[in-house]
Length: 265
Ligand code: SF4
Image (cartoon, rainbow, N blue to C red; front, side, top):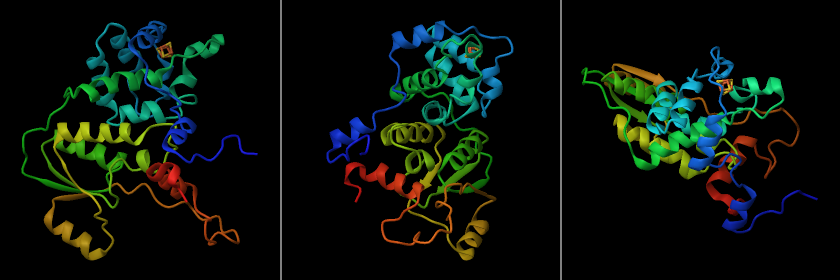
């Protein structure tokens, strides 16, 4: 028998997919940040693929400077909020935390990261602004983490940026490919709106670039094109029956689950 019954209402769906790393309240954040040893060699930074200065932002949280903490995070990773929730922190930063050597619970780095970034997203406090217009235009194909991060960097340098996204919403894998208990659609889209409000790039949704002619048209209109097309279909296993009705890939199933919740057929 399945561990969880199939949800038939929005309330049951929310209960089944309750957030694995819910956002901390201030008391939790102050307590957790006070445990950090601010290690000189900070193995947590070495284990972070985006190299966020983790002890720095934890110290900023602990001193009440949540905006500074968010800036420290976003200067290294524009998907700071999403990564705090969806990254496998237990094998990355938290897996490298020195507390593991003492068999003590590591610092909850991911949740602290989401705490600081959620603060600035919900308050709408801007940390960045576009650079002076340099007269050049760049087209970006794909509004996932690569495309949006590229858009932010280019806008900071003064490029005009238009993003072309095949789907109806931005953030790629974050909204279409990770299990709903890691991050809600609302949280992922709020971070996307927060970045766009600061950097001012345009995004054209439901605009797949599928032909050589369309690409050539972009080449003629822009100084450069960035391809950020990471999210694809689930790789085929080559097994008999894969093409049967109701046999769907994991990514496609999660994408449907995230959009339809308990209404998935
Ligand atoms: S390894 Fe752990 S205790 Fe040391 S700085 Fe990083 S989070 Fe803090």
